[in-house]
Image 1 (spheres, rainbow, N blue to C red):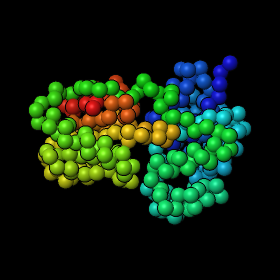
Image 2: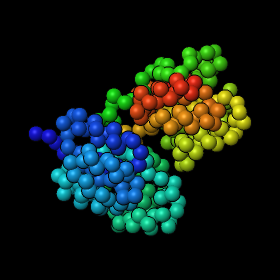
Image 3: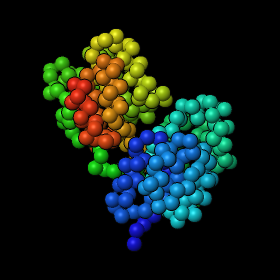
Length: 276
């Protein structure tokens, strides 16, 4: 008999990959799309479709219980910067008392991603619901090691990889960000709450036509109950548009969204894709 698993879905392709992975494993996804955020086409993969607000934690719990789910996966983009620092945006999401208590009491001193995931997991656990590792049903989409697409690694690129890889790992381990841009032996830009896309644009502006490298990974002790970092075809295109020549990702720590399209786009644009 198929088992029901909840799926809290934000924006982007990742929720679809997870839902497909659940179906491939003979599981029934009960999808809780965040209203105004998740892709409505995701509904075609749902055993049940139960929309919720992104800041309505009590509603998550009620809908998961009504869907007979004692486990849930949470994936997809949410504009955390807007929700964290824009009171009007928070009000539009109509946060319930559980969310307000968690945000203004439990997370008052530290709202970094890792701490947020742990607090959400604890709240769900207190209601008898397990927040699962988000890669459980998509492990085959994690990036492997070595050259994945694009030109071979030359001596200049090898020096940049050796310089940047430990720096981005240190950044991720500090739970500050998951991406940085390197130009030669200098750090060009560091990702924080604005997200990778905005950082790529900033790196391109600062590089002024010179080629640079994007690094992306997750912490060594990353809590995979929250989102694992991802790159997709759009990431490759954005790097190329901003003058980047190499995208280096943590092997086993970054999801390749639509991997064949990612490789094809990298080959087409001459962007080197490397797993470190």
